[in-house]
Image (cartoon, rainbow, N blue to C red; front, side):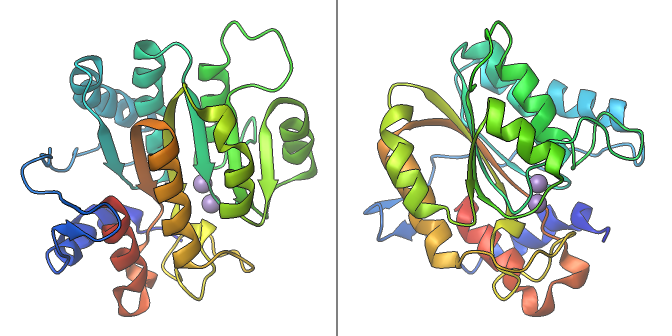
Length: 248
Ligand code: MN
Ligand code: MN
């Protein structure tokens, strides 16, 4: 279902109702961030879109800033991770998603929402000599047999749940630089109906917030993105509202 291009605007609008104070962190967010605004992408031109994102995020990332990207299609993760992987050689990527996104090609395209984590895996695995790499996937409940076979060999894939498996491996992420990508369809459609590919059997929003807090407290998260909210199918704005709070 198309429409994720409308998400950043709607997420900003819904963020205006949120408090600046976080009871989880005991701190206010004021003055500690800046909104770089939307990157206007050439509709339908994938290569140019990736290049435009790269041009905007490269400077801040190489200067040590933390980027929170707001999608958009999940493919927006790729150019951001490429910049982080250049800056941090040991980068680990943590993905919360219903889908593996590990296809090598989708509709004859190498770059798409269905292949993005395969490309990310390749970027962060340069120089790896086989074995499991630095990609950690949680909440996964959909994908082809080939994708699950690939993950079995090369990734750390955890099915269905997010918080409990994360708790069991977060220790091994300590000392690494971590990039977090959250595909909102990791949530059950009851919580997040407004997304491109609805997949039943997901987690609650409480579990997602607990998992994000755990990761932020226990590891060095250098950047993140939240993707795949689709406002045109988002009854009562509930999906955008969750994503606004996630960004906050
Ligand atoms: Mn997904
Ligand atoms: Mn995805």
